[in-house]
Length: 422
Ligand SMILES: *Cc1c(COP(=O)(O)O)cnc(C)c1O
Image (tube, rainbow, N blue to C red):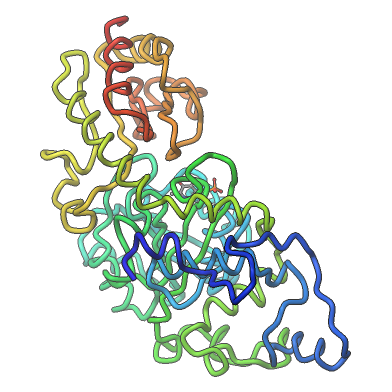
């Protein structure tokens, strides 16, 4: 099936007489008539539902749809993108281990990896996403267990050279984990470029309507944990699961089964079935919406790049952008709806522009149907002075603009009238 068809059809196929639309199984628990059968479920000897923290039919159907969109073997939903990023690493790293991460990842991920996981004894080295193979290799240590990066970094809009990163990761026998939130599988499927695990904040384009915080982890099934020899957590018996060895019992789904059966069982960041249902509604129109976001963002980026009151524009699909060539390779059909740009006149001009917008709403969220805008110097980074902002890579004039799916002329007209107020 083509990706547009998968958005609608994958994950849930009703049998004769069953509801056509994915039902919300808002039940914590399932009933069985024999003690023995329930025991077999607990031993993972038989598959079946018994408790929603471990598995729920609504959540599973939506995870299966996302796995199909990405071209993976299986997936798992989490209650947030943060939980997905955390679990993706914690599933294969423990205290004393180390991993390598792009320095331009989302701020929440940067903090999770650099501060919170450090307290758990898991160490990260942040590297320049544009570093050469040699420089990337130099960040590896004997205890390095993974590499992590974002297809299109939020909000830096850096496009990752996934193929290069996968080559380096595999030369060191570790998997490459890619956060594909901004690109979505409509525009890029990282497994096709050698990535092994994909994570998402489904809160953004996948949900698309700003209703449900959520995340997902998808396993390509391609990484050979046994050949690597670096992952006894997957290749030797798990005492917490009656001595199951994940690679022997679950083969290509070893990583995702462990993430579900062990990490989720113990940490419990599941989405509610209601939220999974809402996410599924968003997924049904993902291909249509992403295309409209990209078309509108391109028109906005072109308009801004020719406007006399704009000093610079970052949008990787715009010819001349620093990441244009990488975007043409990995995102030939479009990148995302998020643009950043600077207005002439610095912080105060940026504030005047923001306050003059009528259609674009000031919100912290990005990547949903409504056009929205954020001025990091006044919002997410407001405690920093101009010098500190520069060090953080956020200039006082920087505006992050998330182009929605309204009519492109209405969006551009709103920007035009707000720029006139400066
Ligand atoms: C928003 C975001 C996250 C965090 O996801 P939440 O759903 O907000 O927890 C992680 N990675 C990227 C790229 C994001 O944009």
